[in-house]
Image (tube, rainbow, N blue to C red; front, top):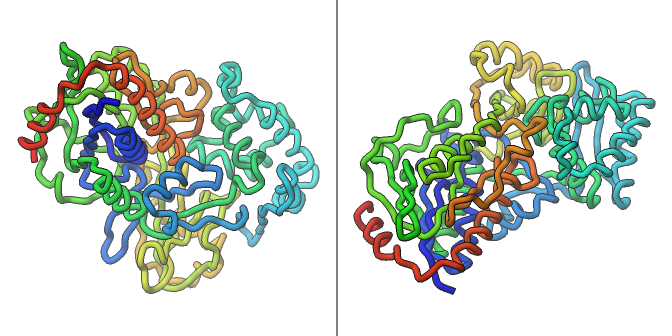
Length: 485
């Protein structure tokens, strides 16, 4: 096989995966990342002596592609994976329930947990099986299913308001980042069929034991360097030009002051600075676009991909994280879910962040449309009492810090009809492939979806490059590397 020159634009999980697999296929790979770190949406930043993740990211045992990437990065020992699915569910007033699987085969492994789930009535619990059977029979690839709201679909299967809020939302809102009733049925079915109704250990929860910046950014940089991938940080692509003889020229923006050295996280999670034209350029036989949908659409349009504007109809859904530091321990739970509360999921980040005294809790709020524009003061007034209702010890603890991180464009809006809008890895432009959790992976917009998209893009591009005539861009790429270093 002839080695080709490939440029991967974007250093998140999708881009990292694509770069590794393209290098494994024998190609010469350059990865461009506009920020000063790898990791994309799953990264960290410094706040005083602590290291803070930009958001809470979890995975399940069934997330095989993501776990394979961790193994490739030699980072498996930096995560904690439950021996068995086990979630404590809290409600105001001291109400507590526990969802814990048994060693029985699926689907009986969760029968005991459901039977004892006292946040629903006996009658409500009995009706859950009807919805579970509906999910089991559902075909996530069905165009007809993609037209239905999850709330309507569940209601038609005997799931009332309380069952939807106290049970189904626990899994749907956090994975699809959309209000439960508004969610895409095919994506919800993927979550339930794979995680809850699949192998008995499929839903076991994994979380990072180290900052995400170490788990993804540092580990990925080391592996990519070892493989011989050229990684360029602070390098922002502004245009992709198709060359008459085949291949591409990627124009880079001029480096902005601070791009190469600063390591900050924007409040909205989006790089909205305008491009500065006139930077150096690279030539390549193939390109992988592994950037958020809005940027991918703009760059693809410069390569002549007219249909890229249609991707913008996917829209965005926000996530915010409320971070609270107490002067003492207020809970022994590593994480918990909540119902009948503005709190959705809360995680103990004390050890991971490097906090030596007190306790650090992070409240993760998906589908956060009603919260994303609230002031820090208003969020403090709302969430401190809410946490005290869930953790009584918090009422007498002192607050040493309170801050908020916002990701306004955390995921695409995973609503009915979104399935038809997601493009695949292949495009109508030869040599140009797409990656990103927003592309059509069959999975929600998650870390698993991002890794799968990188795999899809690498496979598609490798197949295309195998049919190209002899490579002709090596010298141009080498010249660009030399001139831009």
